[in-house]
Length: 83
Image (cartoon, rainbow, N blue to C red; front, side):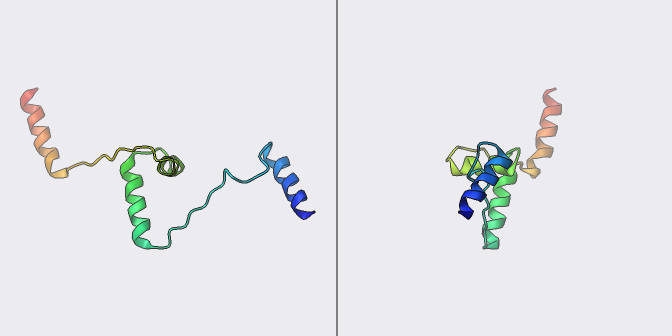
């Protein structure tokens, strides 16, 4: 009986979504995994963490943008020469 009440309460509060399938929590207990995921998120260029996680779960491709700081000065000078 109590589960019926909770379903009604959730459905009433959130509209037509009786289940909480849109609310996910992920825990990464290993700090190395946490750092790796955070680095991938920053490199991916995703607008939000949820967009990043959704794309990874659904197997979508993502791009990683890496900037070689040692080559930046070289490219700047090369651009000046060709301009």
